[in-house]
Amino acid sequence: MSHKTRVSIVCTQDRQQGVRTSVELLDEQRPTFAGVSVILKPNFNSGDPFPAGTHNDTLEALIRHLQAADAASVTVVERSGGSWKSHEVADQKGVRPLFEKLGVDYVVLDDLPAEEWIQLPLEGSHWARGIEIPRLYHTAESIVMTCCLKTHAFGGHFTMSLKNAVGLVALESRVDEYKYMKELHASEHQRSMIAEINQTFSPDLIVMDGVSAFITGGPSQGEVVHPGLMLASTDRIAIDAVGVAILRAYETTPEVADGAVFDQEQIRRAVELGLGVSSSEEIELAPAADDASREWADRLRETLDE
Image (cartoon, rainbow, N blue to C red; front, side):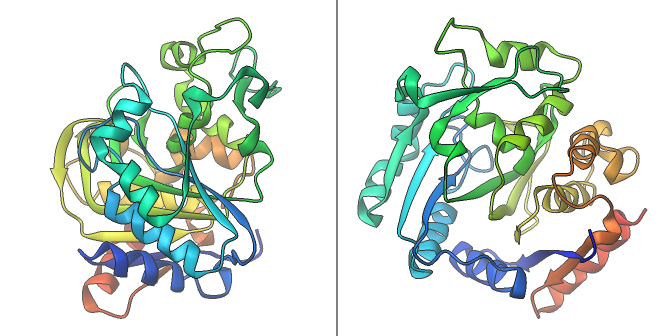
């Protein structure tokens, strides 16, 4: 890449202000959404409270931002994981009244019929037979993601924007009930497989809610810290690398703490696949004007360059 990719850093407890400012700080890299139909991918992995899943205030702020940017429509699309039922998670999080108030559609992937899924072979990947994803992701005019900042105790090591893509893969095949998630979680190549999912789509914007984070455990429960940060980028590798650097500001897990940030397997495999920046030198940190945001940026720069 010949230019540097921005990751904005805003120190705030106000999610509305944090979303707005973090996107504005992307400057000329900020995407436009006028007249475009947007698919919005949150993290509804479980019904556990933030940072286990997307905070409703962040979701509302991001939807309002897209609407203010004159998006033609916004459709929230997601499924939950493990033993959690997607509709139960939606009810527990109370998102349906929010979506109704904001006038956006909500598509639960569990409800999509077989003809609305497509099988992608992913040649050269660690997936035995590729994956199945919803057709609407494959044909979307624009995709926006919002992710949390947390460790992952079940093989992913961390779960941010790259890991958020797991929620668009079918739990099991609509053709023969092949269990994709069982394959993923049983594989020694799980972290590479997470990165490989991201070949199938390209988001225009990622917003990371780091107001609070899990530094151990995850994805549903863990030790909570409060960085008080909102971040935005157009690059999944860049924002995840910065997220790893934030976790390293605390006593996080050895799997996340050890080695160079770009040696993390999710990040390394994503770089191999050309999904974004290839080194920390290609990341431009863009903090808000306040001292706290600048101090975080300086600290994160040091960690990224180690």
